[in-house]
Image 1: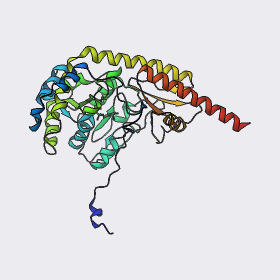
Image 2: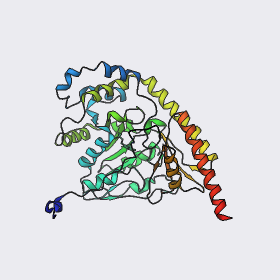
Image 3: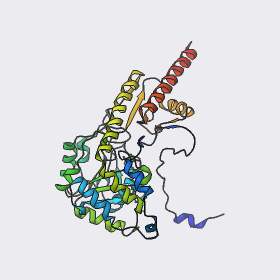
Image 4: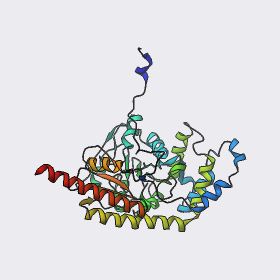
Length: 363
Ligand code: PMP
């Protein structure tokens, strides 16, 4: 069959998210989800939800959530834009702000959705290389460009940048929008959110998916100068008026009310992260310094691809990227202490077996 229409199809290579098995008992450390439930008030709100209202469309301006986020961060409501997870917010931001003939800039190793959106929207891009220690070199971002996006802390490396370095990039690029993707900042990174009051070209993007344990509800937002937010709302309003569903809006507001629970969950994850990092180093891993809810690690002798496959056989899922420069690393989401104990035991066994097998072959 000729399928003549195919010549007009927009060709894209989609982003491939980590596996999301729906059944079976497994330890899931592959998509940076939070191992703890969302704030207790969320459950109660769902059981009390006024389902009669579901027949109506939600508020297209999402005022309730916008106002709650504005109050939480101490900024005006005109500085907040919300969307269906930060992927939605980021995609709309690419479409809105990256519209120049000059290439946009982002690191060669970073969130692998950035080049997908750039390709989808036909945006030119350049990817300066990270340093050997996986750090971002500020100087690489001080040259003509059509926009900049940096994840801080970066993913999948887990390495964070100092706010002063980001500030110098923002200050040197007044002619383009600089997006800082702070998906993981709550786990010990330093935010530049407060700089949005000072710089009209800085957009900070956040998510409820990691620190707020609400990946399933798809809530993300951006904070920036009112003119940036206005531009985002114009593009969003030209695409889909009602992105956020009613339930996510009210649950997003509720989550912000329980700061104590939020802090306690983050504290537990940081604690488990530090312990897990030390244990991995004892097993012969090099672990990058993490300020996120995951670790990026490489083993001195056992290939990451082997560990990845062997862990899967044990029903433990971690993330492996078969990409240049990082194809010998594993990205390991921090689970509960119990999950990490099982993970460490299994990974210890895999390493021991591999070494035994190698010795056997060598003899
Ligand atoms: N930014 C980064 C750096 C991420 O790792 C992720 C998670 N895949 C996202 C944004 C998107 O998260 P969400 O759409 O769940 O908010």
